[in-house]
Amino acid sequence: MGSRVGRLSLLTPREREVLDLVADGLTNAQVAAVLWIASGTVRRHLENVFAKLGVHTRTAAASSLRDSG
Image 1: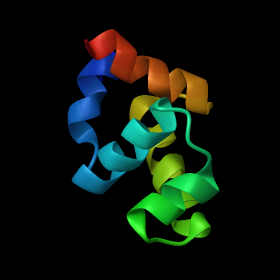
Image 2: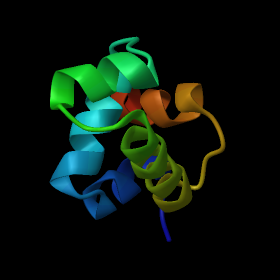
Image 3: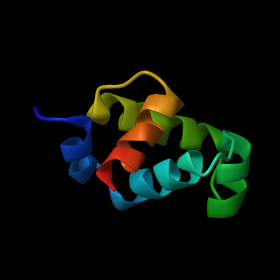
Image 4: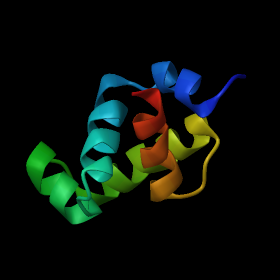
């Protein structure tokens, strides 16, 4: 399905928002506080991000953003 960078377009706006904050170094709890959502919701968004990008870690997901420029 293409590179991880190309797959970024598959993310919903909220998933992208979560990923941006994770890439900035925030924990799930911190992301939840910033976005006014539950930590479990952050975890679920990240699970979706990992599946769409074909990665298994926060670091790999965040590197997709870095690689995209």
